[in-house]
Image (cartoon, rainbow, N blue to C red):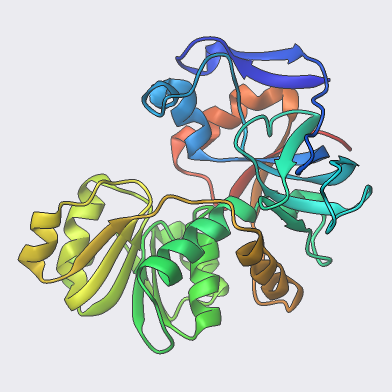
Length: 306
């Protein structure tokens, strides 16, 4: 089977498109025939060297987000059968024709979505869910600022926050205003026109996927007792205390139960995927370049099968 592997860390030139043996599922695993794989910043960050810091061992099979059909089930698997259409997060090897998943990492694919759109959901939606609901305890009628609201994670966060009944302020550049408002945002902030911290005040929660200067300035938008949760930064406890808020970093974890809840929202028409670019698996280098540019709207996915 075809798969994407790196044998050393570096830019996209270290990516190899190779033939490898098809994996065999253990008792609590399934073998998924991958139709589409999602591309996420963590993929090229691992490729750039984060994999070493995480303790991963080379060679590394890239990719962690998949949508496909179950080819084979392990002996202990009871809730899935061969042929089921599924989606979810795997530890590695998602950029491949076949991938191994544990039963707690996948869920039945939403009926409303084709494989392309399904592959755009799991990691982004689970990251947003765990950030906003598990960590920040966002509730109905609270006010939340979502940075990079037009991105792969942010666009899903806007919809999930609205489904919870929150008041959503979406931040992006002016070219994405219509897109973010169509997602359901109650207010839009164009960060290119004025400092966002001067116009956004007293929010209950900030969900940040940008980091850097944006993350640092976001402290000023929160009310006392508010919560700043980030997917990309390491918050300072001292600074959080200075502003009288709580701050945390979200580390997305596979969660089949949450993914099933997300699937329900999709099938109810309350959560939509937004795919910006579809490329064949062999063009993964281009996909990484696009993702690293930080200028895509929605999600980049890799087509493994027609």
